[in-house]
Image 1 (cartoon, rainbow, N blue to C red):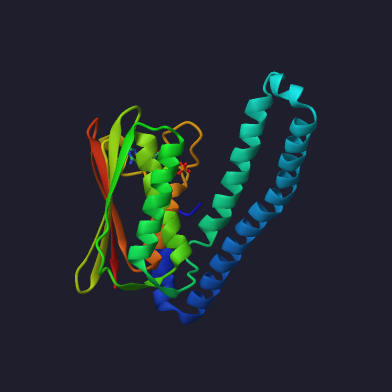
Image 2: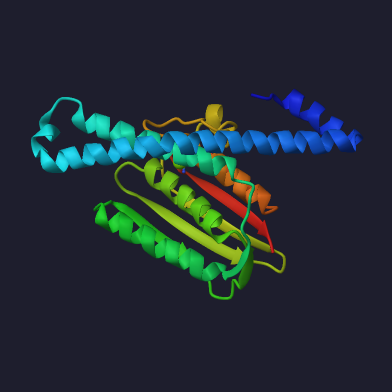
Length: 243
Ligand SMILES: Nc1ncnc2c1ncn2[C@@H]1O[C@H](COP(=O)(O)OP(=O)(O)OP(=O)(O)O)[C@@H](O)[C@H]1O
Ligand SMILES: [Mg+2]
């Protein structure tokens, strides 16, 4: 893993020397591709294992009573998810641009999220303030959707019992602002500086890729993502995207 100091040296080298810039860029691309390929290759047989286990469960429902069966199924699912996120993480910078209505995207996400809370019989109240007139946005719709879902998922996971989540959007002439606010557990000062780093997770079953992936996606759109939080009061994530 490269440290900040190495990255600074590498950037300096790339600025000074055009050939070095080309070679390093190519090496980094190769590196990303290798990691994505490995993740993808491991996921294929793992998906087969997961399907076989599901078939076994259907044909022999009694296996569900076996010790560790449920845990094994969950672990296999988790590794599948981890590999898929690792593969996406490596492709975080490659954007597929299209022009779309940000209002419609956010409203669709809000509806799906509200339905998922309902289906879980959750005590979390969800509200959204998404005005009409946000206009068209040029960006990677799928990746941005993933970012907003990551924030909502984290918000939901931060609340145990009752609480509320709000998704807010506004637009000025040149900036689109999206805020996701929750009344969850908040983020302590000790960890707040690390939460956007890959594999930093402070929850059971987390991969720690959600926020780092989100940050990469937002930054590759030229935007910023920031957080304000108070322990036991809640958190607010703010995304700013240039239009
Ligand atoms: N809304 C939030 N409220 C409180 N803590 C949060 C919130 N969002 C993120 N965090 C903290 O930041 C950490 C990193 O979040 P991130 O989404 O990157 O990973 P994760 O949620 O732990 O795992 P994954 O997203 O892969 O399920 C979380 O483990 C949690 O401690
Ligand atoms: Mg998360």
